[in-house]
Image 1 (cartoon, rainbow, N blue to C red):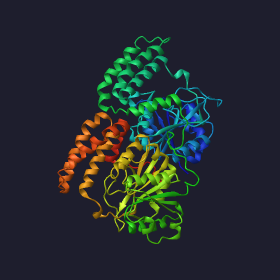
Image 2 (image 1 turned 180 degrees about the vertical axis):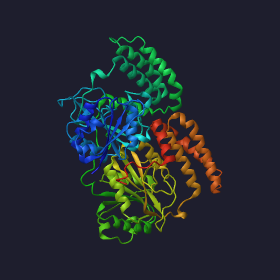
Image 3 (image 1 turned 120 degrees about the horizontal axis):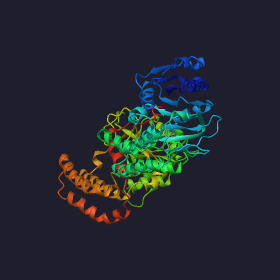
Image 4 (image 1 turned 120 degrees about the vertical axis):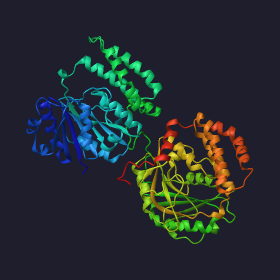
Length: 615
């Protein structure tokens, strides 16, 4: 059973604190620890704690602040002091009506790694709904929200600390929005559970309206200055100041606006130094979620592809081949390791001199019965053949293989399929390449040595699991490329559509690269040509001014390093780009700047996949 830490920040409210802590008896079996931070109460909280049920009091740890620093500082301290993966933060004037709401929230965040926080419904003392901004009301379905209300929320401790926690300069109010904006920017969702109700009974006498309005607008402006892209902040900060004047009507506070502006100006150097603006796409998503409160679909953002009953048990296998019958035979025989996991095998023969159907050796009956061979009338290249295999597949996930691969262990492939079933945001899984003795080989676009499951910007096409729905959503592999570079170009479009590519480090497949089958001169030409074509198709226009010349220069550098004499290569690449320019521009669909930034970050950092339990 997953256990959690409950944290409560309190100051001078012993009665409500006692009621809050007593309600935790409903989830006593889940409690690892209850941390109470006393923000310099006039009367220490020990007396209130002695009056709560023993099942809770025995797990309470109190921390008394030396100075009054506010509940935001107290909440950050609670999360730092906690030792569990999940932390449930409550106000001292909130209490549980039932334990089931915590069980539901804990199960949700534990099962779905893309959920960064769970928001609870606010209930009145009699258990009815309590209307509040930033919380859908009424709704009868779990939905995405742009933020939560801090009175009760469930967090991932590791993520919270990595993102810097709540901004302590706020002192009070508005810290949730700033944190949630950064949480969304990091790729997580905030999910609201309408059935998970927690009572909140705020004291009307404890809040000065004029002070409250000052801090609301000041903190909103601070959040904009720290988190929003500069053009957005330059517009939104004046709008927020105007909003203060609108909100202040009926409240006598003539010096309020002057106080807000003066405080903001005094903090500009500090904010500018620490400023870490989120991506434009995050601002758009935040506004869309605030406007629509879209229904939450497991694994986030509606990107989940429903797995059919058959696909939950089986995959299709697609193999491309050309004039390598013995390699193809070895590859097909190795599929016996996957057993019943494979429902169909599609071999696409790229116009081999001797048809693959006639050239392959004897196969086990279990393989032969599942085998379909499609012969291309003329050579089209392995990229075209992969698209043909994907079009003929019927399962939701397909394992695409080159004919010179041999499966040496099935566990990694099964684990990749399990990851795809658990996380609908994964569009493809790449594998480590193994030498004939089973050791991993260093290879471009994959960590080396790789010791952990991680996000990658692309995979190597020799062997990869891919989901059919996203594959066709982005148009499949670019057949104009013919060979080389199609994986990177497809993965860039998958990432732009909101999907992830994950790499598994245990090499399950040997790749027998035939050195005699590759013309190095043609290889270098094609690599650079396709890289330039991919840039023309996908990169934002301002980038092309820099990246196209860089790629052409890279060809000269690669050719010199390989010791290849090809005086006509550069001119051939330029002619090819000119020949295809009009058709490429016509089909050009540039990705977002945020996608390019993420692609480059993944190539540089290889961040660990955030579901270790599944990995």
